Image (cartoon, rainbow, N blue to C red; front, side):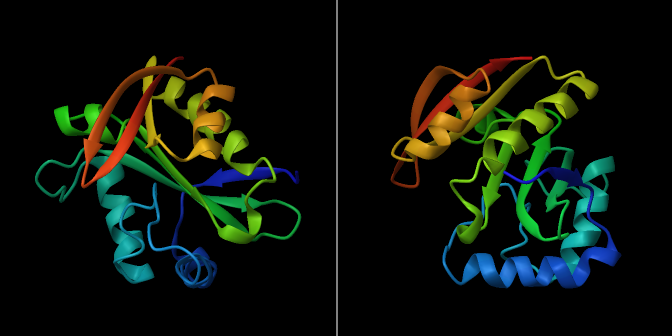
Length: 172
């Protein structure tokens, strides 16, 4: 696996973000951990990322969150996105957790998700989040492994929009 870094996105990444979104949505319909990138243009998304990080203009039932793009250092390509929610609502405690993430289809099974989560956990420590909750679809074996490889222990199971979800706890 090539080295990656988590970067807070800004306007200089706009073309890369648009390319990532196009590539991602050409193969997948759900972009976890992207803070609405799948539904917004890059400019709107970048503004929301800035707002949500400082708690400004949060929609009802949303919490402060830090959005990252995940850049492969050797070529500058965005290989994924990851979001850290600074706190949890009762719903997020049941179905979303503190961290959501996605890796673009052509870059999966290369170790990026595990490394993204490892780096995000360090960010959680910086944010004083000592007990981190991360969920995934119960049938997403790869994501379950990523979470377990980063210290995740099964916490609970719930159903949301017809899907069975597993919530894991990571003591950080």
